[in-house]
Amino acid sequence: MRDSFISSIYKVTKKDKNVLCIVGDIGAFLLRNYIKDFPNNYFNLGVAEANMVGVASGLAMSGKIPFVYTITPFITARPYEQIKVDVCYNNANVKLVGVGSGASYGTMGSTHHSLDDLALMSTLPNMTVISPSDPLEVEEAVFAAAKHVGPVYIRLTLKSKPLIYKREDFKIGKARVVRNGKDVAVIATGDMVEVAVDAASILEKENISCQIINMHTIKPIDERLIGDLSKKYKVIISIEEHSVMGGLGSAISSVLAQIPDNKALFKAMGFRDEFVKIYASDKHEIFNAYGLSEKHLANEVLSLYMYAKSNNTRRH
Amino acid sequence: MIKNNLPLSLELKAAETREEILEMIVSARGTHIASAFSIVDLVVYLYNHVLRINPKKPNDPKRDKFVLSKGHGCAALYVVLANLGFFPKSELGKYCTREGILGGHPDSTRIPGVETSTGSLGHGFPVAVGFALASKINKSNSKVYCIVGDGECNEGSVWEAAQVAPHHKLDNLTVIVDDNKLMISGFAKDILNPLSLADKFRIFGWNVIEINGHNFKEIITAFNAKTKNSKPTAIIANTIKGKGVSFMENEKEWYSRLPNEEELKLALDELDTKIKKLKGRLKI
Image (tube, rainbow over all chains, first blue to last red; front, side):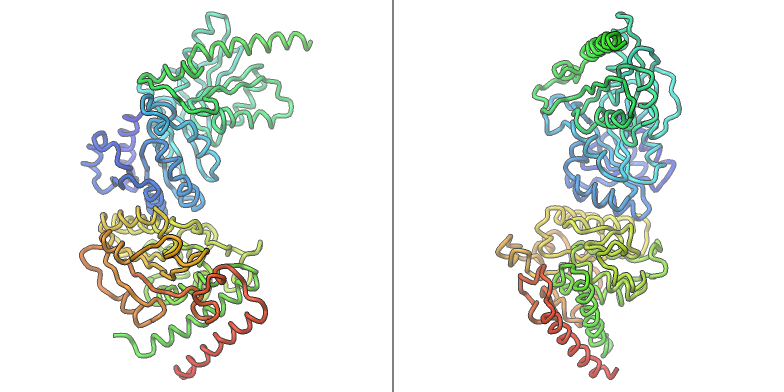
């Protein structure tokens, strides 16, 4: 996803010279062509993120479209009040891009993890929150963010190969169906979309058919689709590379809670109230250790589906 | 050359502005009189003689920009903006009410002429750096002025911005430190000793000018000084918190309290006397 962001910011700047790429001292090597071809659009503002977000707001309120890029905790949690006041309160046209989100920096420890960024960004008025699931979607998100007037946060994780499915046009706030099913709906975001697809293959062998939703926009959440799913399915499960508090699962559950006749059972899978305490260069080892692998997801789907089925029988 | 009457007529405008600030804050049971008083002279001079702005076109892309980083001094800004016609003067009477656009801290999305929302300290300065950088990118002549408080200089983001501005040669940026030396709990030197703010800015790569922030001759000279070596300019304005009403000056209890009826009369009488005296000297 990182490489896709690098090529996308190049393309979007080529199209609109008001686009700027602002970094907190990362990506200089990967951005070398950008720096060579757009020297006046690139600013490395150093390791001073609070100032960087303030400067970006000043640039945005002067008609520029700054994309501010660094490692996720340093563009979300660290300058949080600058995002609240300078970006969101002013409704400045700033685009924040966090790289290595979730547990992507698997060996770096919790300083470099972000299991809270969706929660932090979603709660800010005026902010749009996008969590792409593959490199193609990163490019679509970057172009959509440049076009959208107002603050946007784009959460980049690791997935480097495109997911293969028939895509509807990318639209902020409109989720994508990755795979149709008839028994259970699984709503995933970011790298977890692939995990969900793998889980669906496991479940096929158990004769359970999963619909997989790629919820690429966390805010505004696709309420309409969630409403439709709640009518069609008895079981909905969400999975995210984020705390279960304040991210995708919370957003879905708050939609479901507003539906008076909702009968769908819902379970949110994600990191619990804890820091990741293991180091692993393959992030899937972390997913596995924290109950978030495709096998864990398949097991959850299976047990919830069986429960709903038996419960349904009892009710009638 | 400074025109003979200019400092006196500015003093008059500043005294009248202080009266309006006092009346506005007291009638709304608001706060921060003393913080507004310490910057009145600077704000009056900036808006009447420095900033190239048009109240009828507050979003003119060629305009100069002013940022009040110490947002709690906003009563001074509100009165000056209203007097210039950025919004109707009747708004001053609706300060801090549901009917009005003027709150206890400035909101850029509601108040014409306010460039960025402030109130939380250490925010306006970096945004001002962004304005100045945009002006450089656009090869525009637009200049940026920003007032920060000396207490505000406790904030780390102030020094992040202070590093970035000289690095990018933002000689179109002037930061004025309202160095009134008083914070909520007492004197700045006893809370978090700033040592020399002038030395700090100098070593960060700024042109530094130190002035008495209530002396219009010094204010005029400072703002007319030519920028050198592509550096941004820091004006360290030595000011007095509560300046203009003698019993409020340099007294920490007046950081946030309101005058009672008797004190209000005393304060207005003092300002009235000053206004009459100045009008006499100006033969108005």
